[in-house]
Length: 343
Image (cartoon, rainbow, N blue to C red; front, top):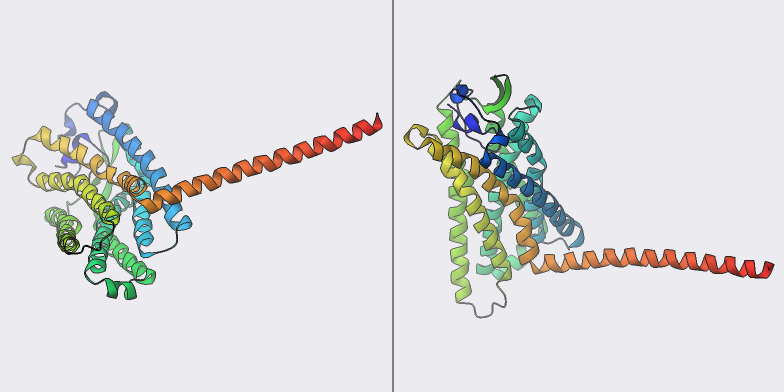
């Protein structure tokens, strides 16, 4: 039984059942007739708009308006991961509203792959950022001599390759099925049901538990070091990174909790479990727009570059308008002079 597909077919709900849902034989209400489904759809639309344009802004600023540094490499990589995720959200929104998969076999697999790629790449990048911060604080001289953009880029590439590898199972087991004259996209473990708990637990360990253990250790070391260092002038970068990590933790923990609970769904209240499996993916998706919000409102460099970029655009626009007006006035003046000579 695939509980997630019983009443909520949004692809971001990665509950892996072994077959096409069996309990959907009872009357099924459409999304537009369910208050929770409508609310989650509206929330997902808002997440898409904020995440798409917010991450586009971060990519524009960090990729084209700021000097390429190790920090901007981290920011740019996170923004690309979240932007890629947001571009596929309209597919999930459509699937939720229509309650039917209309995007074909390839997109059924690839859409789910992108969602897991976002999850793994985000957490791995946060781990790299935390280790980088820790090394910079504990070994500042070494970091100053060896902390380069090239090495940061290699670390990012490694994180993406690892995320791709861990996301491959979502391609293998995602399939299209038909039920009650509807086409659905679901996870099929019929050939080997034991893989369901193995993959779910491994995703929790590799995509949440171990990364956060490393992050907590790194930040504990940083806090202890900063307490003994009176020369520290500002803690702004650490506040930004802490906020990013806290946002990821809050957004993703409920998702993993309900996915693990679903492994023994018969032991828990069905209403609570299905509600959690509906809400937790939307909460996880919210992380994709929280990152750029934290960049803009907490990062001084981003705020300054954003303001300067907007001012330069306004100056260019006003300058162009002024030049156009001047040309128009000069032409009008010359025409008037010619007309006065004829008269």
